[in-house]
Image (tube, rainbow, N blue to C red; front, side):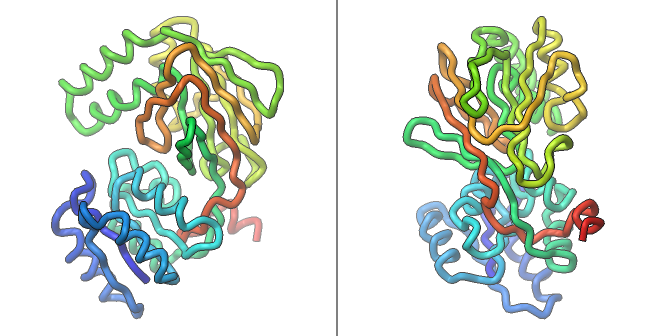
Length: 290
């Protein structure tokens, strides 16, 4: 097995390589730990994939972990994305913790191959995969403020919140689900089967359209998006989908698996039933079904 570590990622630190080697030495496995370096970053990742290890552990930011999982694909090595980023949506969904050492131990001791479904956002020539959720529209602007507040950066949280409030209701989205007639919404959230409370495994993405009546209602929805049972809110409607087209008059703010991005005026999303193979504990519901 190979473990890739980005010591410069916000949730990792300079001691992570030595700490990872110490943990892995306690297990009967042949493992190597690679510290990712800026000028060799992409080549080191490709070398690790080309080595075809049984498992590829990734301790890095949310974007890097998602990119490696996407490059591994359904036929590549098992991937264990450990929480080394800011929001850590994918590692939290797989391991139920934001502590990378505990997640590593869970993967080693309780891990089993799991097929992870997801989605792919196409923005012009750029394609970006997600395995938890993609939030599109003005409520996505609240995500950086919420994360800054969580980490105690109050001044930064205020700046983000003020920017989000100013941009709220600046333009509604137009979207079409599976080529059905176009609809409008303040925001659209697309949720993978791995974390959806409404979808059965690998049948599609849960699409939730948000239509708040004012800025305060939008703030409430954004504060609860993905993490709580906000789907019961009367301002939210949901359905299953496999293909989505999204348009707006201006560029579309989005948060894709915890990573804030600014999409073009039009984007497409497709469901991927077999995105990659993860090494993670089997969820209790899946165990009961066996």
